[in-house]
Image 1 (cartoon, rainbow, N blue to C red):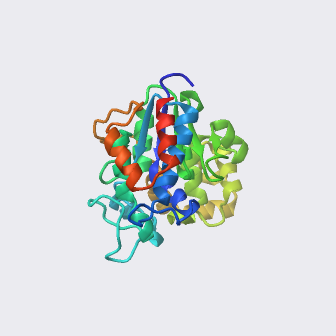
Image 2 (image 1 turned 90 degrees about the vertical axis):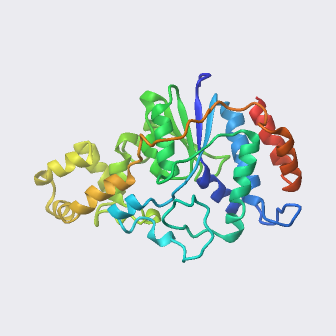
Length: 309
């Protein structure tokens, strides 16, 4: 890629993965857990070092379950809502608290502090998820974009014509896949522009999306290949087999609501942040102190090396 490429991180997706994938025995000087932090730094170092972006952003979930999405579809992420009084990793503006392990929740402020000392931009917006922030930054980017995530919902951002890819880490960071329209066509038979409609039809239990009963991945892809979009499918109900027509007719209200819930907002009001990749830490002394106190070890060295490349 050229010198003006951007690398945008779905930060929570990565620190959750790090928390469950890096040994919990890693501890700071005070005995507190740091496995999610150390793992996240290694993930950032790996991608920044390999892709050498000119611009970078660590996108943030200021609100992991926005009330406006819940109003449209009450089942949205409902199974992940924590009991009252639980520790939150989100902004105080968030309406719902996500169920998060205590050993991870205590690391989130440390992650923010370390990213700030490094000068890596953290970008979020109250009332919106990181997905919306990622979509907005991608829409505004002047050059090619790579989005790093373990979330399939962000496949909707893929656009070969604009040079937008998703670096998908579901199989691990070292074995991440470069998701393009060509990749999506081979895997699902759709394009990035069709992914939202595909997800609405198929459903996604992880996000509380029931989908349309009787329509799975293959049938959803087949319908989209034939009619182009969900709108096209609904406009041609009379051309469908009776069972499919009946299923879609019974789910018309769901289809309209879920389409708005799944689609990333692409014009979120974001704070003015310089996304230029720092080559050295913003505050070297503070980062060195944090690295020592949190026993970041080689992870600190690797992120510094990656930034300087």
